[in-house]
Figure 1 (cartoon, rainbow, N blue to C red):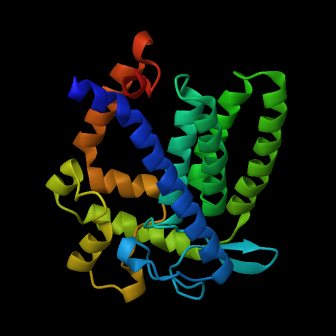
Figure 2: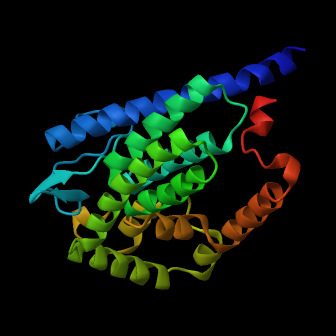
Length: 252
């Protein structure tokens, strides 16, 4: 009985934990953007940042460079992807209470936008487009406004000329091509990309950081075989009608 009671309490605990992480990262990111530097929370995972630092992710707005929101993540792309996951859980879930769902929706969108991540924005566009065709008319109007706003940011990010991103991708290709076969197949470990660079390559200090393309980084860190297994398992469970809700197991 105690185990069953704990299992029933687990969803509420998880949701509160997600919300705490969400709000913390939003507040830290906003302060980082305003100040143009990190705020000193290194003991809980914040990176050392300042807007003039070479290799730090920035965004040009009206001709001025601002620091993109990192929060407590290793890179803004990771921050934005976290927001996308929470938003996806919101629009896919039918068992979460409406109040909690609306909180997840609103704050996760803020997190995606302040990350200025093209990858996260693209995934968000897919999610919001799905939402347009599954909600009532009043919600569709609001969703359409969000969609237009995100499109403006999305295409302005693609219009930027950023030689650093090209060099960053070239460096990743070189790193991956020179890695061992077993590292390609089984990965180097989550969050280990920067350490891997430091151990195996002589680079400038500012170059020992995560690659700006989140999917490339995850591909290298997780490895080909684990990714195939994850994809197959995910496909198997999501293709089953009675398990289409990603939070079903947590909310029953």
